[in-house]
Length: 556
Image (cartoon, rainbow, N blue to C red; front, side, top):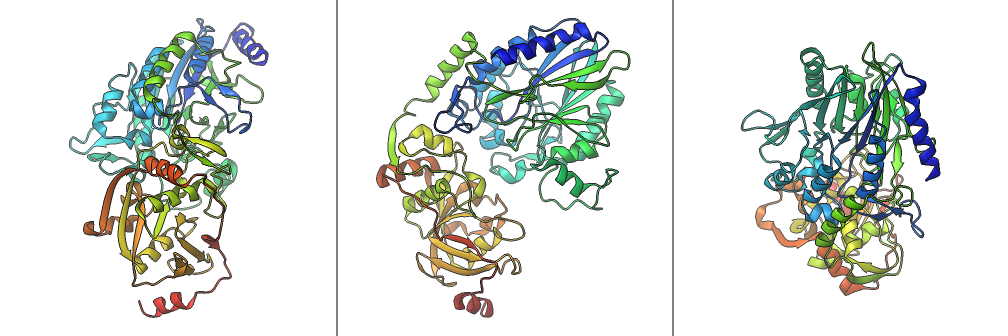
């Protein structure tokens, strides 16, 4: 902890050394996903993970930063969305426990993420109405009124250091593709670029703010500079006359194509960056942190008191930059916050440590050609639960791993924190093939599958890429009837599987089984579980169609 204390003391002393600049300390979180409780940092060291202090350690850091405040130095505390769904304390309380913590430590504003709509709006509203701070989103519209829903506002203005700070929020339009239609019924998500620019103009021209901060539930691309150069030339001009992306605008595009933003705090992709990326044309700074409450962001904006403009930034640590990992031994948990959080955790986690089975191997979620040991286990559990011929899950549907040894309900919850339900349907072999073809079209990388053996070639035309297909070890028959199982999330047409929305209702069975419970059932009945990567899914660009595939093509 000595390293942090020295750095914090150095930062705290800077106003005395450079009196001409004002300093605004901005603390932020993004994609907390309910991670306000203590947790082990298995992503750092699976065998000997360091202890993270969660919200209680965050409270210690926040109070430390606020202790620096003076006439020339003040702070803000912000969140960029996806605040509750993912850990038991957040999911079981439907966000209320997280809002209680955010109220306690004094957040100044939060924007809305896509996972806020993993529950029904009336349930979400109950949590949001508890907030003692504004909920921001400028591009979520109630279709009945044409206005922003009552539980949100587009922006808020706060006064710090004698400055007017405009804080604007937006929600990724990907929400429409990633949420259950029932949960976003009556909502429309407006184009991020156009809507953000409109409100930035309002803040600058009508509200006369000095600094504009955008909380955007959208992130920078993983390969920041190569992606930028593929989008824009050396002058920042878009390389394409028309944007063809199927997804919403990301933080890099907003920073480049919207003018007037000083700082954009992003999220959504769960990848932190240690120092802000600065657009070379607009000079907008973009920063974002990792997820699940493992760290807290901190960046200090230096502001010229004469021009009231941002002159630069400072980060609190040499290696981590603006991302402060909340190690419990470095940030001793705040006692009051810890007591409050643990009381909520105790209510949410009743029965979570029950052992439900055993695994003989470490069930990793690392994908190798659309397979992972954890992913394969999940789809095998789905197939087993309803005795299906074929099961499938989207590649992004696996959220954690399971160590070898005893498996608890808690560990399964971490793998599958969302309340997806098991749904099965019957279809002919040709429709089954189309499901697979849809997920290898273009640059798509496939599906997690069980019950099938798929070989495909990317050199072949879209929707004719599957060269070999077996169901249950037998040659695929385009006219045979198969029982297929997946999740209600995918049956709603998400992950590009729009064709599932057209399965006749009479062919669908809603089992009323939570996918988590199906995985628990599998471990209880099949333990010890041994899983391996096998030949269920294979890309071979030199493969040629089998006779069954050729016959189907010739006799559609």
